[in-house]
Image (tube, rainbow, N blue to C red; front, top):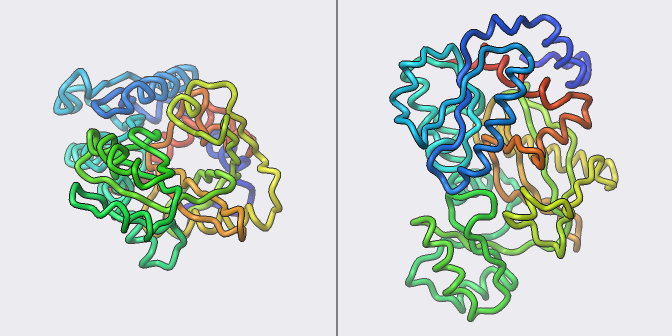
Length: 330
């Protein structure tokens, strides 16, 4: 349970002051993997590994993209930090294997991971809980493009249902662009989603904990070049601006945090995550885009930025997240 008698940043420092790195045993850092986000996972995982070694943890890299995941049992890890992104790492599959092996791990469990990576299932759960998310339609080769554009409006967004990092995403401005946008997304996934494009501020809100004890960290406002937060601008561009504090009214920040928390709890997430949100410039309504259950931990990543704003360094964040696996129920 999270002790709410002091701010999260102070609690992290208090928790770590009581922690002996040797208590964590042999730690596996899962990185790389087989998804389209392998490159970013390697950056995240190597950052995590370096931080744990710096803290004196007996940490070892394990890449299920180059080794069979079944070999994890041979390593005799006492716990695992999952730094995998996308399918086969963030979708419940590796989580299920770790549970069978009875190895505690960071991040959400099997069901929450599987639900969160499926943008359609995620939206259905959010809508059933009365949470705001852009209108959407699942696309197929038989879709009536004119009807889709009429339903969702233009511009609209087309993207794979199970990919992250903006892979396969297209902002569609005319009906004629829909077939090629669908083909681009379908090349990466068997399920493709189109959703209303919300124009306004792009925000993200990291979350920690579980259930009623979960809480939101500071919100970050993202200002990419030409309003295009694509793969390059997410991970490699120095031109994208990250505002934390956001510069928005505190009431808006609190509204976004409350929405992100409700979204996190509705999916049954635990340990940590990050909700991506668009703030409609017309009326200030925040709309949920997706939930990340294994957020990036690169030099450009957002959870470390929010943690820093709360007074927690990258290395302390990594160590604290790993220490929370001691409380994860199998």
